[in-house]
Image (cartoon, rainbow, N blue to C red; front, side, top):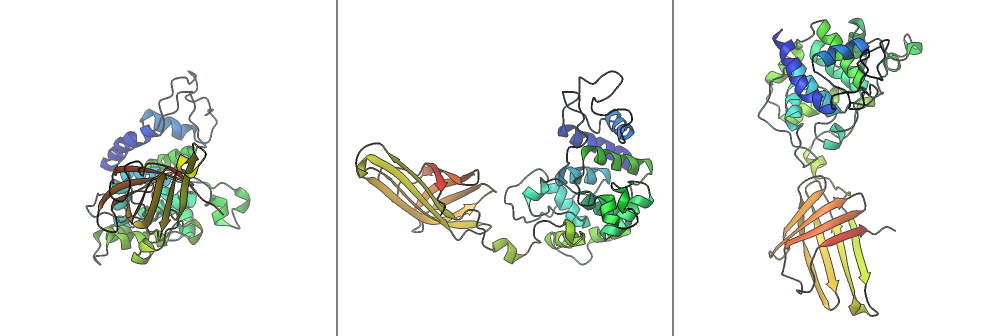
Length: 357
């Protein structure tokens, strides 16, 4: 019972943020898009009454809207009342986000999920197969997709999606590669609590004890490896993978503007980014405005998925320039302090566009 009430309380805090309360539902129907004969109506009614999940201001529940992996991960940790850990994962994504602590905990238990090292994967829609493997691993220690699906079927947590494959292809029958929806999410946890499935498998408990003294990143790698190959996204962590070339910043970005008849009546900027890795890239930045010009070279440090910062030139002179990705083909540069190497009539501020062949 302790796990039940903790799970309900924590899920209220999180899932309430997925949507705002519905105020326009008809008196005899909780949500206008959930008729009484909807397969998830009872589960949604239960979840709503316990304030686990709400609807939208237009009176809809949007049962077919996809759930992201990190949304599922948050509910998963709360439902099983998993113990937090102090160790933190190193990620390919530099930006710290709210789900970091959740994934640290899941890595300690070695729960099979994809997004341990990549913020973008965390925010993408989670598949039913991934959810099945995470649940069956935690409850029963299952480590294959088929055994995980079979576990959920045996205990009537799910009945599958494609009846024509029931006796021929278990994964297609279950719809393993399909996205988990809001309605399916509610049904899964509704049926789990109805059967008092709050316990943790000995395998998960043993992995949490970590008698081998593995690093948290290695435990996350082991967790990702449990996932069926058909469900995996991204890469496992390694020093080489973290430092391998990252071409997402590389390129020559330019801006030109002519306001007169001659060369001196124009301004421009040419930013060249090379040798981009997961943590830094090389910068050569030339800017001019009429007769005034300047060039700076150095190494910028990547501080998040979309931002990097140059703090000094290759000669060791102080020069602070922030680089921010705008969409996929532009970079906005902002100079905070960078007087060395340029005339006073120009600076390193502007938005530049990637040159393409």
